[in-house]
Length: 340
Image 1 (tube, rainbow, N blue to C red):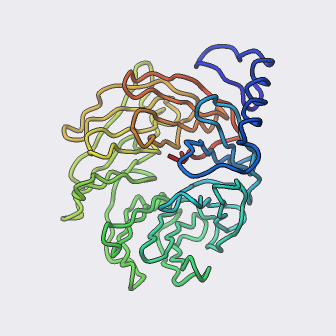
Image 2: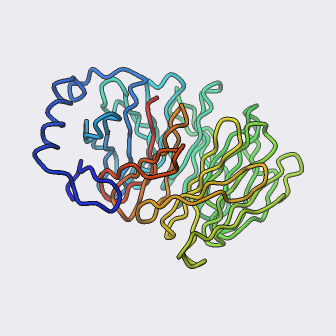
Image 3: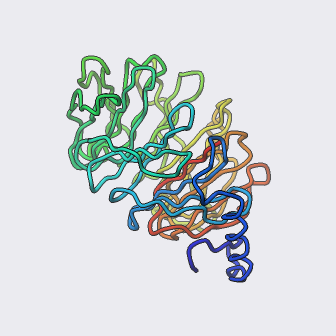
């Protein structure tokens, strides 16, 4: 299947002539001319192996632009007004800065070795970056493009979460099976907590009480009581027809009201739907091969899932919990961000 193909999961690609017509209409509408404004609904997908972002129109699912980035783009975050998109590029040790209106890379921030995920603190004009190969967290001054501090962590740090008051930064260590707490001002680890095997990413309940951590190789979610900084529970998964060893959760996101969490299950190609209060799985949604990256639309009606081994993304209708369409992107898509 070629880039830009549209298909419902499990069905053949749509006729090439139809796709070319859609692409032409998109260009005529101005998407390809650099006149896009914020809140466009554009879908951005980072692709590790093709060193690019694919930008997709949310209405036609046609590819708007193929943006060349620094090597191995992974985690992505918009700034508050969505005028900029920051992209961690692991093989060049930088964060690319994309201008959302022009869809062009307009700057770079230097990081430590192999940045993977990061968190923005715009109030303090900082970026906190987990450096996978550096076993460290970089604290970067955005305006000065300066690494203020390099905080040692356990091996292969990945997930990064900044507390609401900006005083604490939580970081996972994949090799150490740890979650660190880092004092954002002092720039050092203040506490550690052992969790499941190979912890990856975070989601926090909106009341600030719990931090959910995906543990890839133990196949579950660990729930941290933030006040006590202790493990308060676990969520396990087993989609129908899957082996337990296939369940490798990585990506997770939570609704704004904190009632539902969505978890990508990696080699068990499903998204799990979890009731947060009861910590029970409500159901599973079949997606593509090795889903990792996941995000919700602002209205929370749509889920977007990056399938790393399928070279595509799956778009899910939240209400019906069904996959609507798969869209071919670049090689080994890592994450999805939506300008809405």
